[in-house]
Length: 174
Image (cartoon, rainbow, N blue to C red; front, side):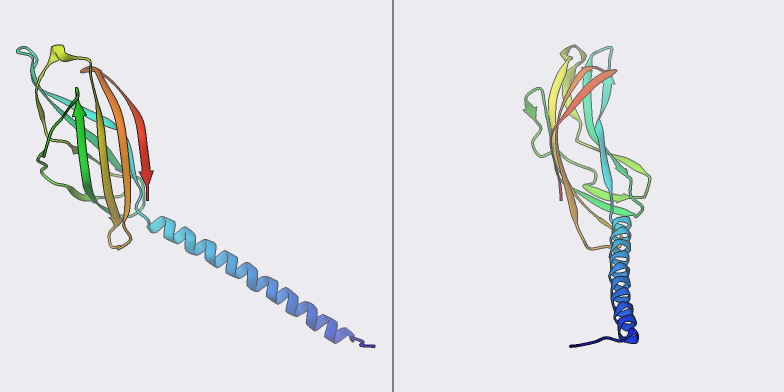
């Protein structure tokens, strides 16, 4: 019969303990790597739609600007590009709006508002107004090559110049 002496048993135990420590070190390393990758990933949050009423309230000829507030809640500089941004207001969609810019850079802990083109021809007596904001934005860390995108479809109502409501209908992240 096969007999083990104390030195062989001790060596076997040391091999098992060493293997266990290798396993724990690998787990710790992969967790640290995932944590580092998460910190290097750009994170852009979307706030509710923003409305600006422009024009003369006395003549009641108004223009409306509708935008989305973007917040960089991550720890890295992010570059973003608005792939599409559509607004439907009162059943009308403005075709081929003009934008000053379709993107830019967003520094950590900073915000910006991406506005749709001015929508003209509304009267203050037209309130309440309802509509839909549908947009998709792609973004990446600077420097960085991995692209991410976010898509939202938000229903909104402008009850009065001072009071608005919104409801997120669809959202998707990749």
